[in-house]
Length: 343
Image (tube, rainbow, N blue to C red):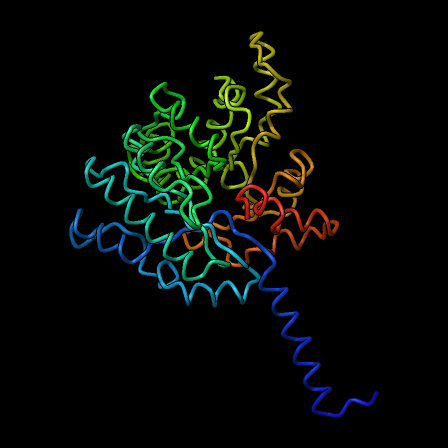
């Protein structure tokens, strides 16, 4: 069968379109921040003109511009969550509950408008465990809500292991919502105290972010293990940001310390390493390769911190550099996230 020039060009266009579609559907980003417009306005009402709702970057709130950005970089879907500037530290209880409702309702609307591009992590005023559970129940099962977003700690308080928060963890496990953790900004949340990572020298070098945040994730992971929380909630899924922080790289030392103190865990320590998922935000390909070797390709997801100070402008680039086997790449780009988020 002969194909004319127009038909040939048409076939070429379809092939190019198919390639673009494949590129656009490459990855699911489990660590992508946003500041929806209704939430930004509500912040201004509560806190004054300064608002405190993040940078004025249009990509924070303009979903059409965000989709164009995603298309150019091979990202199919963002899991929308607040950044480290989440307001639970300072917001009064009534305002905190209202802010959580506003941002969660905005996530449902974003998913309704773009169901193949956006899902949300449920936000909640975590200083109020009973109110947080009420907001979780309000949002449970709503279209597009696929995870729960939590700060690692506040005021250097590991709240999530306190008895008051046990019903919240149990409900998350029952609903099948993975926990997406992220450290919280603010002087009172600086890891180890302002004297060390919040002094002028540390602040000038951004050390609370580059050191404090990874220490936060390592502490969260270790305490999930030593408190027996992972054993109590065997089906609870947890995603650690920033490539797991320090945890994967000091896990052997933690295990050695437990043995030295004759501290018993219910299961072998290395099994707990695989109870967590880790985003791929490692910055060095060598670091990411180590993480994959330690935890397994089936425990790593794409995460970029977009659009924050420490973001990954090319979301898939680090994994691409590793030239992994096709199956491993598919798991990291989208397979693991699709399973976690029940897509």
